[in-house]
Image (cartoon, rainbow over all chains, first blue to last red; front, top):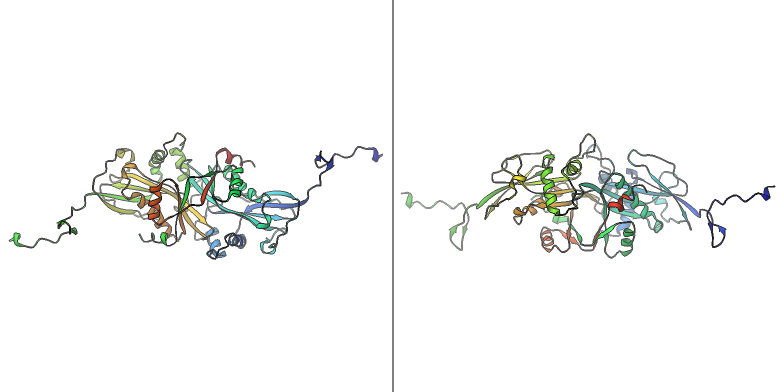
Length: 231
Length: 231
């Protein structure tokens, strides 16, 4: 008499325009945001090079290592979030195991994509765990507002690799920094955008940011800065 | 026969247009730039209040103390220059004694003013040493450039009290930060300026800074930031 029994309740919501059950899941992709380690430096370097497209870019893996992960025996090394900090975004076709970290519990998310992503640089960005590849990063550090008498975060770099764009990963990275700031009781998250980049500006405004129209960044660098060394 | 002896060589250079000896010294004023201590918080607070002229300003001495000079027993406290750092500018009618400090040797300078300065708030800004008063401050902290793979400094606040302005003290404070950056091998010193403040922009350009015209600061703050806390 099983045939007479009512059908089991659908596990997916029913689309009223077709009265059919939606296709479940599409192509699942699993993502994780975690604190970077010194092992991530080659990937951070590759992404930073890619972002610049200029022969003026002279950053090396070794200069990134020395400044982002200095030797604690010779250089003061505050804990993550109290100095230069990098979140790494990884994606994988299989779920990430839950892990914990004394300073930051990784953020895990499952995505359902209409089409699978073909990553032409998969081999170059593979990590040791779980078929995962690095898909992006965000580099940030504390700033301070005398107006609020509170620290905040300044985002220096936010990068998602080309084949992973327009899928919400940029928003996920920026949200991770904002959530961390809010949890720490910090007052602001700031970054800069080029004034002609209307798509980026719209994206940032949708995320709740204001664009400060009247302020201009002043920069003292190169020989002009070096000239002060002996003054 | 003293009258017949040649006159002693002038100790001041001779002005050829008058053939007279220049008036020596005018009104001497001695200045010192040193690292701030927790004892400076009331003066930093007063200057920060003065700078803002707004009822929205809610910073207190206690919130400044807690964030600029946190309790090392409960909060990681990197050494000066590796976190939020304040230089205090003091002035005095008598010379400052030479002092040293493990992280920063104070900068001493002697000024010769045409007219003495009347400081209407002298009592409020007096320090314990040497008839000195606090005349200004600069608050800065490390930033980071992925392009250079080097830290730099970001100047959040530079303030000279009204009666001490237009005498080179702002330049002295900014130069002190630039010199420290150059000595530490840092790559940049950055700050922001309002686009209509043409006097400030001219001053910064004369000091060797570029004004980046295309970049805009984005800021996520208040409730818009707090909304990310639980996401």
